[in-house]
Image (cartoon, rainbow, N blue to C red; front, side, top):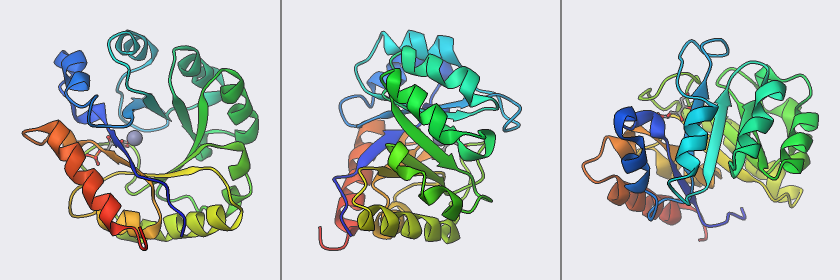
Length: 226
Ligand code: DX5
Ligand code: ZN
């Protein structure tokens, strides 16, 4: 298994929305990416934040934004996040009938392109699309809400993706999202994930930056042969 150094991406879904800029600054020197969960009350029942908030936050920090779009019609909305300066824009496979075309649009708008796979979606049909993507986000819960319990069975998809990525020598981050914390991150890393979203485990901690460093250490030590 060939795995690059882990990426830790705190999710601001678990932050205090009245103090977003401060909450971002609290992790910007410890974390690699800032994970931004965009939900539209259609693709998922929940409703969070959208483009204006991303644009405002972009101006107050240098940390790369990892935008996770849990929305319908991503072909209409996703390129706007690339234009706003997002580093990576991930949309859901379940919401898009031509993922490769949208990945191309995102890359030409200057962003990395990410494909997300929700809890009930098998990974196999999407493996052959991965050369068009920079990030594969495998949900370890059902998308829609923070603070849910990690589902270890979903790591089977991570293992399948890791085998495929290593065999094909693809340059692709395998990201896990949902219930990632000190007691779950090692198994996700051992399965082959190399990017880790953590909401509650970071922003629920007394010291969010320290929580990020601790998660990173656990992920580093869990990779076989690393
Ligand atoms: C949920 C979001 C996650 C969420 C994770 O659909 O995609 O990014 O913030 O939160 P925790 O880490 O609390 O499970
Ligand atoms: Zn997310």
